[in-house]
Image 1 (cartoon, rainbow, N blue to C red):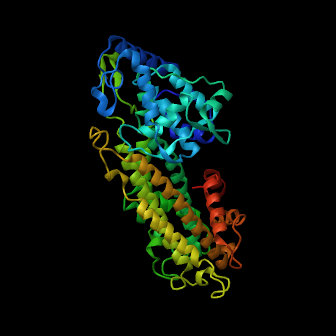
Image 2 (cartoon, rainbow, N blue to C red; image 1 turned 45 degrees about the vertical axis):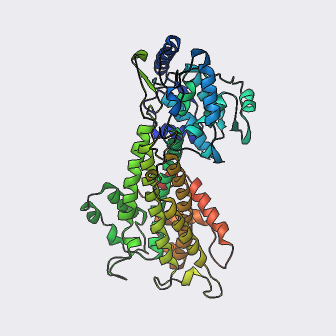
Image 3 (tube, helix red, strand yellow; image 1 turned 120 degrees about the vertical axis):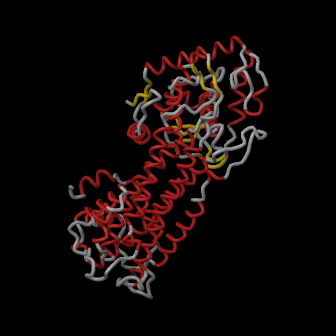
Length: 505
């Protein structure tokens, strides 16, 4: 059981909830804060004080006063009008993450919702009811308004959900789980949609995938090093220590362990004096991507425990401030940084693929073909990788620099963080396919060199991969191999494999 309190949610807990379907509860202390915050809202309504989003309209309508008899209609109209997202739905795991993050933010006790709103959010999580949330339509400031409205509307018994593998009307799924729809009260609609939970949820899933992918790039690069009889001296600890970057040194150390015991790896001057950059500079390039991913992780850890709605209620309602914590700029920049970091892992992987297949750059059969000329071998797989990395370069253009005004220029600078997070997800999927192509080519190269000469770790990797990806003995429809390798990379339990196969330090 994961217990939320609005303050201490961790990546480990997020993984349990998202992927292991761990049940979620709230802490009693945090719910007491929620109750106190709610009393403040009710007092504001009763006294008919002018407070943004409670007794006024929204955005450019902030100067329009709303009578206390209309506050419920105000919230209903808000959610219905803002649920205008378009395009394909976010993956279910992202929808699940949005619910988790929204509940955690409300439990901080600065939002003024009733406890029942949080209870209903946790009901959705624990019942496996995941709102269908379109991916497009958020500017990433004023909160992820459109996506989160598609979440909020489900609490009202409207909209659509994914439930037990099916897409259905929300009210149907709620009825199956005996969950009673809510009638949102003063401020509750606004509290549910003013926040960065769409971009942050997508960002969390992105990071979890990118972290595993970054580790896997090192393992597959180690296979490539053996296939190309790479020089191990470039990974010497002293080289990386004097540069001073921790992540660079860590990559070099992991590579050294992965190739330990290999008879295919060479020494400086044995076959050649130095390798090309795509081999020699693996620690420097991959290490820089790790630096960026560490930055992204730090920002996500802050954001998933942040109060991001508006207005925020302090001092039992004596201080209610309309600020801008919904602005997604911190996550927007982090997602743009992630895009570049992962795109670079794919870029250097594609260059290693080129070195594996280009007969002018190695002494392997041209394009790793079993019958060069008659059979093309891996020739077009390199084309495919080149196409993917080129597409990534377009997707890696920073979304955060492309603000555009909205709400009659009241909201005149926005983050586009949700676009950045979506593009980061696309880049990760493309990068995984590039890595799958490198894996296929590296497997073939080490096979030509002699599997019996491989390092223990890479030999284990070779053995596992060969269960899905057969040797290239003749041309075939390689798209099937690429997709099989991609699925294997995505689904494998990387930490368990490393624990089992990698020599101890």
